[in-house]
Length: 381
Image: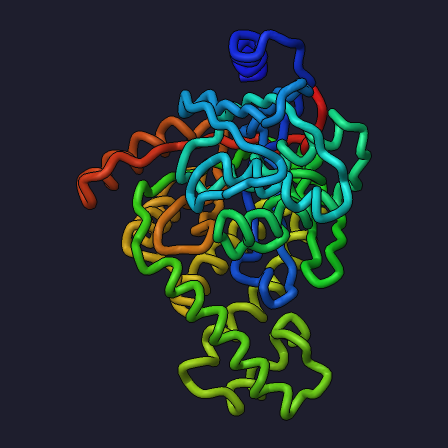
């Protein structure tokens, strides 16, 4: 992809560019905990977005998306981001950097990526990060990584209309090969944790479905968590978010919360615990325990948080009954997307064949399979 992006840049703009790469990410465990200032466990992957960028002497910026074969131009002084358009992420980052006091000049840019569309691997965060890093390198701004992550998050929220957390851009910037990040979403600090997979690997199964209620359900779950906190603070004044509670508090909490709210709070509390348990399991090289935690996470997302769907549940059941699979869980916001599976390398081909046949017979859909390796974070290449 790097060579394709460079060749495309030379073809369109006839100058030598600077090239950066920003990866997508997977989240090993810790779903729907970020907006309660909880813990997540993401890792950068080797799939990502390449951006080639160079200064120009024009009165506007020219950008080209290789994957869409589309060119777009805008003026730095009068940008009009359009929700859903790929160029909005570029203009959004430019606007945030301008607001932060960085003086941008006009540039040419080509982007291209190999993150499968709709796979939940955070292609939008990778794009924002790649653009931000490219601009920082091109104009020698030397923007700190954490600042870039915050700018990328804000750009998505303001200019792409996505109410995203810090996890995606943070993982894209701070990722380390063969490691995951134990990320504290309150302090926005992390610990690198080695992921010793040995003869096992991570495989994503893309359900190829995206149910329409995902955005409204997300808002409802988020509101339920906030309502639970408001109630619990009357009895636990020190509690700022659900992340401040432990599994040992659940029996007391159940007495205080309405039946409609308790399962949602239970998920966030136990999921934060599973993040720490998974960290220890990887440190102890106990992949069987990791598999059990993945399964428990899926059950909690399905039964307590209620953000799964029949397709993902079917895939999880089929994975659990397949030779060589240690564990599996839905990954992402829910109601579609991917199943993250931990399985033995030598069983991947058998697993794919079986899952594809069973899933196609049940839902008349052919799933995609994405083998992911854990890679380094965003960088100039």
